[in-house]
Amino acid sequence: MSDMTIFEAKGAVSAELFESLKDVNDNLLSGAPTGNKSRRISISGGKFREFVGGEQVAVSKQDFMNVVIVNAAQISRTYYASEYNPEKVEPPTCWSADTNTPAKEVPEDQRQSARCMDCTQNVKGSGQGQSRACRFAQRIAVVLEDDLDNVYQLQLPATSIFGDVKNGNMPMQAYARHLAEHKAPAIAIVTKMYFDENSPTPKLFFKPVRPLSEEEVNKVLALKDHPDTIRAITLTVAQTDGVQKPAMEALFVDKKEEAVVEVEPVEAKAESEPVSEPKKVVKKSTPPPSEDSVDLKDIVDDWDD
Image 1 (cartoon, rainbow, N blue to C red):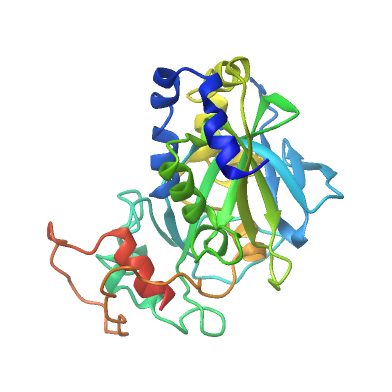
Image 2: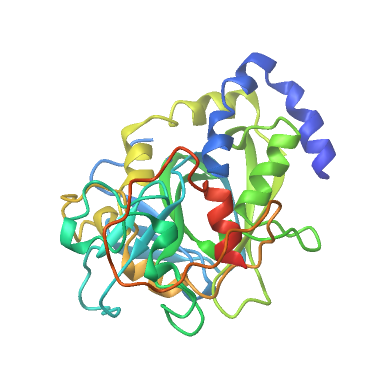
């Protein structure tokens, strides 16, 4: 089914209902009750892995997975001062929920900078190779096309979020814009997630498969603000697996998952004038950000340069 056929077919659902669902698309551009058995999907090792209650219960033999995006958190940043230890899950040193400033929950002595754009951990080479130590990520809540009852958390690395459309392959933000152009809410579309065969590390692309029926839309819509869904987009992977108590609240991603999927800088190109490369400086007091501070798009453009 072509994209045009998919988007034209949305007439099966009332225009008012479609209009009420578009806020999920907005979150993408910036998850049936499961009780204590929290669920998530991991893409480590270039495979779709299903975890329930912290235990891996299935590994897909296919290189794609059809899902419905139920809800999404905004893009965040995380920085870990220590090296990854698979035997020890720990929270990040510093993190940001809005990608502009450290979250208020970050202890004062752990804050790397007053603003993310000035941070030395946001400089090329501060991470492995030419990467940056502070990384972007996004949590989304999905249900499987053949199981609309159970919500799964999926954590996307930066390479699956940003980037140009190449040969029809769309990272998440490009896909969200594609849906928005056709006035199609992600929650009313079956989305195909598939791996980039040319990437040395796990990286996903997204494309529309078909519109949901009105019965399916109503079923998924009931999950949009369900507690399981909210937990899926706010808890870290460690918390989802029951490894760590949610003491620091959900404004960061888990290092265990990030270490597997996060890699080189993204290839997305700037549409606006790029921000100059931050330089390493001695940590000192910085005035609070002004109303004219650089927005997420500008930061991403700089980070992707």
